Image (tube, rainbow, N blue to C red; front, top):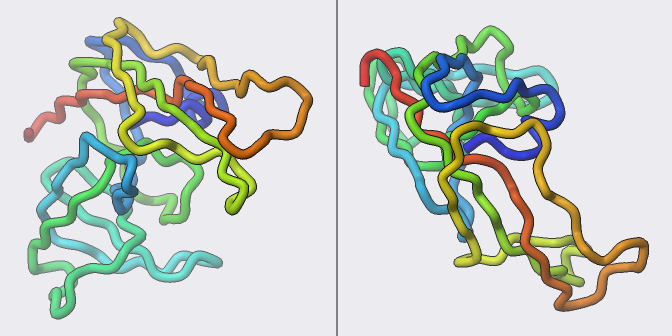
Amino acid sequence: MYADWEMECCGDPFAVGDEVSWPLSLREPEPADTDLSTVEGPVERRDVEMEGICWVIRSGSLAALWPGEVPAGTAVDTTPVRLTGLLEVDRHGPGPRELPPTTGTVRRIQMVTSGYRFDPAEAAYVRVPGERWLREVPACPKWFDSRAPYGKRAPAAGDHYRSESGVLVDLEIADG
């Protein structure tokens, strides 16, 4: 997943067939997440200034930051673990800046449109589980249609809108 705000901030648009190199995170899934990945490999502990402990999982040439917990009893750096989450481009999250990017060839790009509803308890718009639409696109745009349609008025309970929230990318890496 390449989130809209990540691309708009400091991303470079890409197209099917392009070779790309991205820092990745494997984040714990949320209820609205689909298209999860399972990564199996050894983990390394990293102490990140102002963020605490993070983990890096490696599987071949794929390296991803894992901010969650690892299974109890894992022998760090040697025992392979299986972690499932959403693989996403992460240029701003916690983690070691020395983490090598994962390089691969873009094989497919799908625009992700998500439904959002205003939740007064959160005082924010939240993704609505099950409201996600995909459409095939030949390239990732720099800018996304990501604005709430309510103008300058304050949001109200139940306000709902659809927004392009990023692109889902099939990335082929050299070692599978």
